[in-house]
Image 1 (cartoon, rainbow, N blue to C red):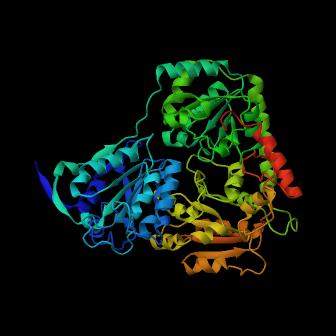
Image 2: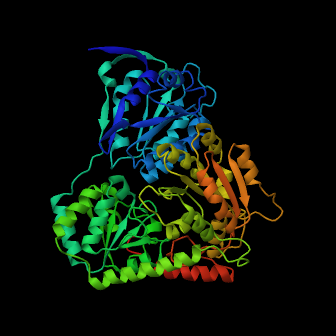
Image 3: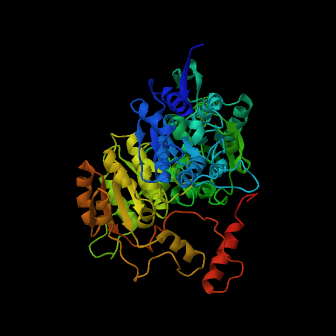
Amino acid sequence: MASLRLTAAEATVRFLAAQQTEIGGRTLPLFGGVWAIFGHGNVAGLGPALHAHRRALPTFRAHNEQAMAHAAIAYAKTHARRRMMACTTSIGPGATNMVTAAALAHVNRLPVLLLPGDVFASRRPDPVLQQVEDIGDATVSANDCFRPVSRFFDRIMRAEQLLAALPAALRVLTDPAECGPVTLAFPQDVQIEAMDFPESFFRKRVWRVRAPEPDAAELRDAVAALKKAKRPLIVAGGGVKYSGAEQALADFAGRHGVPVAETQAGKGSLAWNASGNVGAIGVTGTAAANALAQQADLILAVGTRLQDFTTGSRALFPKASLLGLNVVAFDAYKHGAQPLVADAARGLAALSGALGTWSAERPWQEKAVTAIARWQRIVDKVTAAPKPKANVLPTDAQVLGAVNRAMPERGIVLCAAGGLPGELHKLWRATDAASYHLEYGYSCMGYEIAGALGAKLAAPDREVVVMVGDGSYLMMNSEIATSVALGAKITVVLLDNRGFGCINRLQRGTGGEPFNNLLSDAAPLVDFAAHAAALGAESVKVADVAELEAVLPKAFAAKRTQVIVIDTDPQTGTAEGGAWWEVPVTAAPSTAAQKTARASYETNRKRQGAGA
């Protein structure tokens, strides 16, 4: 058997470069590149290996390890999990900086391969610089922090272990049910060990996403449940996009007259003005979707984790039985749902075929049409540009309305945390599955700009627009410089409300006094436009929405990364729509505000379903 004498690091890089994926009949590299910040732990091993294969497997350098992993995750999300990236770091803080990103990928079921350097397997020079020592367990290193936030974890203690570990990693990364972050901790001395690897190990392999059909018995039961329903509602999650089930969803909803509501991850599964699309559901949902959810007798949850923002902390579906169509059995059974474990597209097609001419009641369909028309009038109203002198500072809704109206065809909006995701979920008019990119499973501040960079690398022909608050910007902004260096132009619209306005509103809503969230008048003002310019972007601060509307077309037409700063009102959110979210309120209220909040809390808890 032919073999190749390679170091463990060289074998890893060569193996990754050989992996392929099939998208729309085209075969492409599975890995779009490797993000690397070198230090002791990877510079002498993976560093030379990546340099030798830089044409087949490009290497990108970031300024923050968490940010580069966010970029890799966003790249995979933009490609609907069909393509991905790897990330390598030094040991110590370089490695643990990626733990937050690993958790984000785990929650959102998104693939990323993490290759943190590790301490010496030989232990000869222990303790080395940055080594975390456990007095009672000599096998522990800082990389053990990745275990609870990885779908697959291994530590490569000998070069030959790669023959089993790398294929196992790829199996998880490409599996629709197991998909998530994979961590291969890579001791620095093992990286440079050499051995004879079988040449066949590096053959090109094409990975295709498995799309399981539904079980016959589960399908029969699901059809029976639907046929009994008179007021069904579909909740479309991210699994619709990852399955490529957008057309299957549109066909099912249209043929059977079932309204469709969308989670954050599922928004854009149908165009905003598609027939039957009643918009966002849950805590950040539209009045239309949430009113229908309250009255529905069956919820068909397609490709969603049914997290608390979707279910209104299990209080939003009081009359409905649940039918869970999901490729992941863990999710299909949630909240006592009747399961239909299958690929979303194939499951919807099988259901539709078996249902025949069945459809929801005509009055129910008409109610959905009326409700969404009423909601769209609200959207028009709250997102309209303010009249002159109507408000001192614009609301988030008014700013996003201006951006939405100016958005280029096939543009992508990207956001992650704070109050903006709620406004976007309710109000943004998404045009296709890729046009709305929200990370709200982990709601991770700092994802926004790094994520936009990853989305741009995945979709270089689409304008990527970041909506970010000043709090998230201050947490992580360094990849503005990376975007400029790579020529990966993004447009950042920075809404400055002087602190954490969303949490300030939540604090007050639970009976608390404003504290430690908004910046006081004595705090220094940050010149965000100057800061962004220092990182290489072209930047401007606008005075109001009218000026924003004037500069947006120029920003979208520009070739270099743009940052547009606008001051906004920290106190005002869109009052319309929404649903209850369980946030604990003190059981020993001492103020009038706390007593009011506690009474409301106890009332809403009575509406929760069994097991909540």
